[in-house]
Length: 300
Image (cartoon, rainbow, N blue to C red; front, side):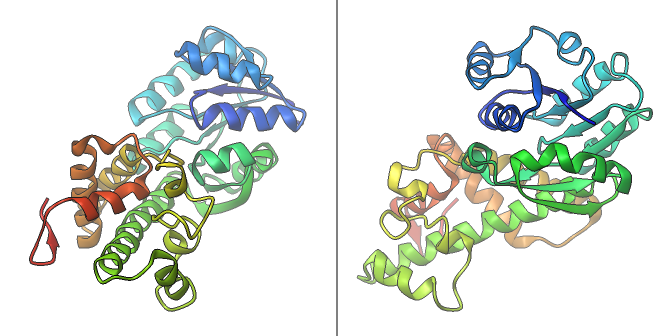
């Protein structure tokens, strides 16, 4: 039975995820290159060490939560020389599908799963993340009890890389739908509608979606949305741009038509270039409202 877990990557997502494993009774050893991240994790009960070698010493499972594919592949290459055969190794980063598949191949003697998440920092703190899993069926079942303390939902998606594929499709749709919700509120505002009145229509009519009902991009209607705390990020615009770029690259590689995904990517590129990338991605509402519009189309 898995009782000891190594957690590599203790940032805004990783630290609360590791902390929830501690709360569930696991012994968690963590590593991150950033001193602030190490301190945050230590305050949550994680035993922090100073190297990848030290973090995996004697553990039953390893979880990585890293900013990009290059770091994932570098860390998993290191793991190939130091983890015991049969160790469960899970990556919850968001990376491209081909890199995810390549990571699995680096650890043929281990039980490997790609398990990116949806839910942002709020879900990481609350232990309600949605995990999208790719890997062999027995690997997915082995990962399930380890992921449960951090999860609201655990969704098997298919073979190696399928978790990442599902995550990119989901976040492309999320970026598109948030822009649509923001445009509706911008138009409503220009037409003299109060935000609450428009929300009451959209949230109960055919326009309803998560970006309106749960994560409304304007202040007022949904008290828990980032719009009510000056767009402090649950999911930063720069991270949305990263995912939209990954989705665009995947669409190019497999020749899939995603014109709205491409337009969403360009809008978030302009949003981030304007200096707003540190804000929540729902702040695209303020960007669309405040920037020049010509003939009804945003000029980006």
